[in-house]
Amino acid sequence: MSFEECFMHMEDEEEAAECIHCLKKHGEQVMFDDDLGRLVMGREIYDNRYVDKMEELTKLLNIRNRRDYEFMDKKYNLTMY
View (cartoon, rainbow, N blue to C red):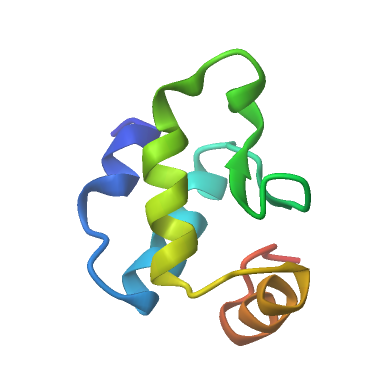
């Protein structure tokens, strides 16, 4: 299974959180970018094919700013620490 399969089931907030966990298990870096106002993957620096998927994740999790991101991180352990 490649990390791209993590994006296959994203229809609600919980599935979006599971997608982030899946991405992290595959070694992907997922973080909130204050300038863009959305979640980003580290690979977006050199590969912008996943921008739409990350925008969708951000919307499903209802993240509009860093405060929303921190709330969702606590709710779903998005940083997995």
